[in-house]
Length: 585
Ligand SMILES: Nc1ncnc2c1ncn2[C@@H]1O[C@H](COP(=O)(O)OP(=O)(O)OP(=O)(O)O)[C@@H](O)[C@H]1O
Image (tube, rainbow, N blue to C red; front, side, top):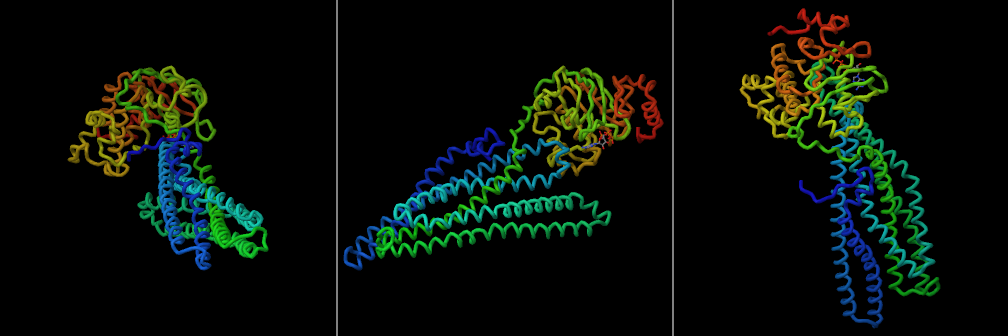
């Protein structure tokens, strides 16, 4: 959708969101001031009308005076209400714009969050919680902006009016509002706690829902549906309970504040009557009494809103603190990488150690791969092949030094990393688009060429489909091997200087593997290539082998590796006997 809104300069600062909306906030301020100061017209005219009626009865005024007063009243109220509509529209617009900015920021942040982070928290939970927090934060900002005028400005105006009429009675009658505030403050902890519990429960419920949908087949096949249903019902019951508690707290606050604040009304009626009788602090007529009482009643109602505002701001600030770490400057996509020239870049590891959660799974890796070279990386299961790839896309931490094209990897920006390194992981991550769109990702590339490179052209022909056919949700309209080859075509279509392919041939037969590898060699002539694989068929043709074992790596040409590393020798010989390969070729 087209929008004129400015994005906040610092998405992690709440002030920035207000700053980005200054034009809208100016409209809100002007209309808000007119509306709220205009609210005094009500009590003022009501007082004047009551006085006029009294004067008519006593013969001191005529009906026409009443008519003029009433007409002026209606005109002023019309203007005031018009300003109210303008202000409301402005505040809504402000809230919508902020919500859009925050959601965009959140989406960007989640898209760029590390796989590890997402896997640990659970995407469903993270998303639901974060969206609920954005909503509650924006709602707090909206209420704050509204109430600054509808409550703040108008309360000051009403208090000014009360002081003007009788300052002593003003103090006496208003003392009850702070008491309502005090009650609000005492209760805010409960409101916050009930809300936090409600959000946690909502997140857990959506996690369970996603789990139930995503793993439906597994539950059915293994007869665990009943079990899951029970868990789901439990989560649902918990959600209902927490949601009711949160709503109850919020809903019961306002009547309580109103009741406390209304005590002041008793003071106004008692001491006001004395003023009219001439025995109070200030001599009053009927108009003064009516205006004072009307002002006071409106003030009391506003005071209860102030307590509500307090709760909304409190709730918003709790939510804001939770989402603030996700509100980062948006990571910009690289300008079409498929178009940018690919520079030759070597890859060098110098005393690199890496792992997860502070542990070094691999230690002291040292090797250099030059442009045009292919290195086969292998090792036993869970030896750290994928870890090596993850390090090179910034998904796993490392110590030591990695040089890409002579530049320290650590000092590269996200954009620079993406313009140098292309990675293909285990999960094809196909989008629910056409096969061709999955390859191009919007870049003007010859998708047919890359699909041919990965031998997908023959499959499409056999299926009597074209590259413009759908890949299905997460690629489910294709077989596992086909999904992998579409993902490989995508990687090749966007290949930069360094290409890391993590198990690219896991689901293809030997003939196809040979054919694809041949195409890669021809197309990727000057690129630096790392093939992480446990299939060693083509390793003798590679420039070097990196054999991962015992928490470190040996880097040698294949023949030397066979001589020096008995583990590698065994792996290779086992496979050459045909044990690990299908023998379709
Ligand atoms: N996100 C993670 N957090 C913590 N440990 C992890 C994580 N991912 C992998 N590991 C562990 O790191 C080790 C290396 O895993 P990795 O996937 O790199 O091995 P691999 O050689 O590619 O395995 P395979 O041959 O099965 O593909 C394993 O012990 C694994 O359990």
